[in-house]
Image 1 (cartoon, helix red, strand yellow):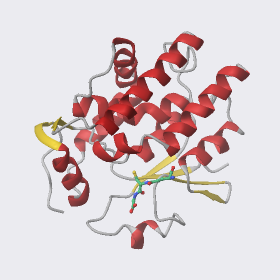
Image 2: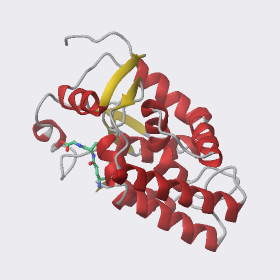
Image 3: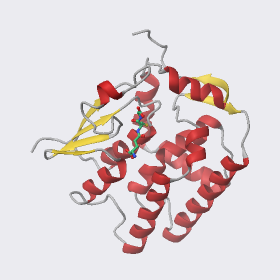
Length: 233
Ligand SMILES: N[C@@H](CCC(=O)N[C@@H](CS)C(=O)NCC(=O)O)C(=O)O
């Protein structure tokens, strides 16, 4: 059987790409990674060759094209164990929490665009951003309390943790202040071998995409940049 192919974009910026990638790596499911760099301007010309929405991530498997991160996760769940928690109540909760990330936390995603290798002092934490952070903390606290941790829906890393992995990078990059249990969970995600692997690759990228760089610079003062030197190519 040929391996599924996962199309992703720059590991420094692409939060949506990280979700299925982290899950595939955590579950040790063999796949081929194809990293397509974000273009300066529109990605449509290049990305539409493999994705109907010209967005990443996009999985090609068994002759099918699956162009949405949650749909990719559900496709994997039908084929591999461990994608969701085995306990039905934990599984239902994990699905709700992943769906909430998929459709929500818009201010957090907008104000704190993922940049794995940079550190930014936010200009301000608006009331709307604080509301997203408050909801995040209560959601994480509920999962950790109900299912006993150390991961959101129990003892092992599942799809719901993969969905919140980009948030852990955002928390660190933007110095977002969380309560102790939430900060500890974000720290556990950042220390997971799969996130360390993603981080190392992100830091090695010499590419800069002007639109993402602009969003990040607009968020606040850039205090550190640990990425490899930029190349002009
Ligand atoms: N609902 C989609 C969203 C994917 C998405 O927005 N991807 C971003 C990358 S982080 C993208 O490809 N942006 C490129 C563009 O909009 O041109 C999913 O869950 O996969």
